[in-house]
Structures are given as structure tokens and as C-alpha cells.
Length: 190
Picture 1 (cartoon, rainbow, N blue to C red):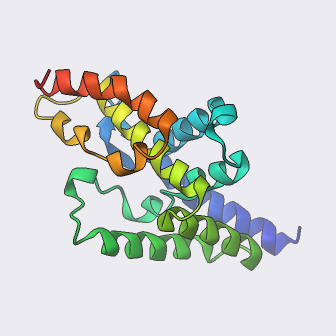
Picture 2 (picture 1 turned 180 degrees about the vertical axis):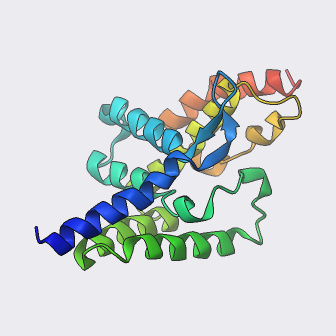
């Protein structure tokens, strides 16, 4: 590795560390806001733990999970309830542009590989991308169920959140079932 490449990788890793401080709308069980890095970590843990049952390429899935929210290191998180159907395209374009800025310092082959994985996740066209979307939605619902949320937290939103992704994967749908029951109880709909 050349000194220039070394410095480029280190700069990228430092910039990506902003995900540790990028807060999401979910809360931990102790009531602390969850970071995007924590969300991504647990997504990867879920994928590794369920590897034998997922039926997809684990390495590719992990690559998708690691980069899927990387643009938030620049833009921050937009909570799902605030993402309108009309603005979804803008959010995707904004996140892609932010990611391109983060990746710009990397050697071109590394930047292209990471961007290709982000594009794959966004397109939801491969088995790994569909599983990544499903697990992403599952992890979010799980966080909302187990978190010490504020009194005005909108649990009912989660009953439909990401269902088009989680319902496609029977294993993820099965894991979501008890979470939905708990969500309904927390929303006062049981």
C-alpha cells in the first residue's frame, strides 16, 4: 500500500466514524438515543447469527449492511415516519451523493466497490439486497419495541413499517411476528 492510499483509507475510516455520533429516532433499553453505528452493528450480528437460514451470500449481505446507511455520516438520519413517499427519491439521491463524497478520497477500485454495494442495496434487486432491506426493517422494529421510548412515541407506525420487505422473507416474517404483537400492545391495539 502506498502512503497516499494509506492516508486515503485512514481519512475515510475517520469520516465514517461519524456514524458513532449519528443518532436515530430509536432508543436503547436504557433510554439513550441509538446511533446509526449501533443499528448497523446489530444488523450485521443478526445476519451472522442467521447465516445458515438466510439462503444468501453472507459476505455480500454484510457488505450491503455495512454501507447501507453510510451516507448518514454526512446527512444524519431521517426517521422513517418523516420520510414521505414523495421525498423518498430525494432522500436516496441525497444519501448517494453524500456517500460519493465520503468515498471520493479512497482509491478508485475501493470506492467503486462500496458504491456498487450501496446501489445494489438501494435497487433491492438481488436476493442479498432484499434480505438486507428485510433485516434492516426488522432491526428497526426490534429497537422500537425494546427501547425506553418517550411517552409520545408512535408505536402504531411500526405495525406497517417495512412490511413489504419483511413479509417477503419467511424467516424474517416469523421473527417479526412476536415483535408486532408487542408493538400492538405498546400501541394500545391488543
